[in-house]
Amino acid sequence: MVKRFFIKRKLDIICSVAALVLIALVWIIAYYSVRNDYIIPSLGETVKSFFICLGQKTFWTAVGFTFLRTAVGFVISFVLALACAALSACSKIVAAALKPFMVILRTLPTLAVILILLIWTTPGAAPVIVTVLVLFPMIYSQISAAIGGIDDGLREMADVYRISKRDRLFKIYLPSACPNILSQTGADISLGLKIMISAEVLASTYRSLGNLMQTARLYLDTPRLAALTVAAVVIGFIVEIAFSQFARITYKWSKKEGGND
Image (tube, rainbow, N blue to C red; front, side, top):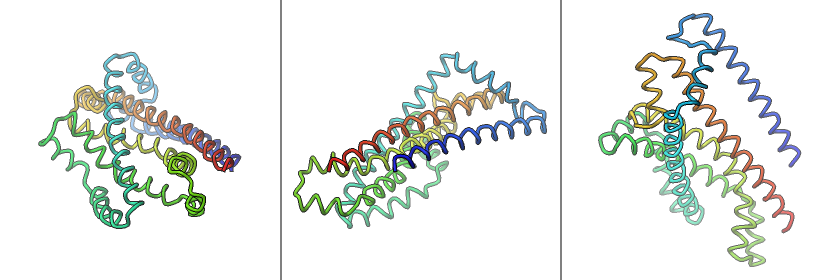
């Protein structure tokens, strides 16, 4: 299993590099087909603008606030999802009651919600609330699936041998569920970042990547707009890589605990 896990990771890296090369080729072909920097900026100008952004204080301030809002939205979503998933696991009535609520949240039109929230709240709070509304039902489903995927034999063994709640938590449930949850956490935060930036653009949130993108669009600074988009993608990629490492650690923890038992 461990060998298969690392083979999969290497394959993911190779596919990611190949995808980046393909995107760069498509970008170059599209630029030379149009030959209009206001429509499609050149790859060189975008890279240049990207490094200019890296040297600007306003850029890092915007990145910091955007990522902070994303983190707040994710933490709120995760805590709510974890609590609801735990209640659902303990009670079928709670699970049945939450199901239509989750369906409604998944089908809410994001744009309409943002516009309504801008009437009720501030441009700084609206993107966070929207991010929570989108991430919460998704994370709930992921945690519920992870809990439901725990081997029934482990549960029966814990009952038969009367294992304490503390040992069940740290030696059975967490080691079994953590790898599955953490393997999706990076993707969840990346999605939250994408939603956050989109909401910031619509809300014209002060000190945000979305606001910088909106300003670049208004001034027709297409290379800067593309550079900011690349920056958002890079941040999301770094987050996913970081949490994939956490997933590897918890996977080893799970196997170790399983071996000890």
